[in-house]
Image (cartoon, rainbow, N blue to C red):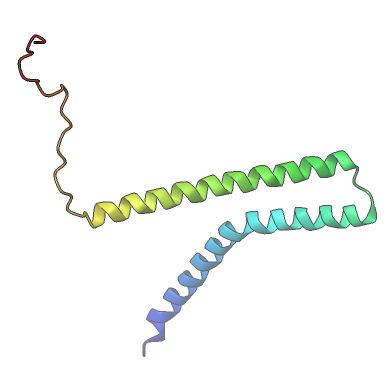
Length: 109
C-alpha cells in the first residue's frame, strides 16, 4: 500500500466531514442550548409568564412551518417518483357539452 496516496485523501475527507458536521449541527445545537437555558431559567423562576408565552408561540410557529415543509417535501417526492415511473392512463371520454336532441314534438291529441 502506498500511504502517500491515502494520507491526503484521509485528511481531505476528515476536513470535509468536519466542516459539513459543523454546518449541519451548529444551528441545531444553538437552538437546543437556547431551549435548555430557557428551561433552566423557568425552573429557577426567572422568566416572566409573557416571555414563556412568546417562546411557546414561537415553538408552535416553528412546528407549523416544519410541518408545511414536510408536506411540500412529500409532494415534491411524489411528483419526482411519478415522473420517473409514469403509469399508463386510459384515455378519458369528454362529457357531452349539449343535451342529446329529442325527437320531434307531437301536439297533444
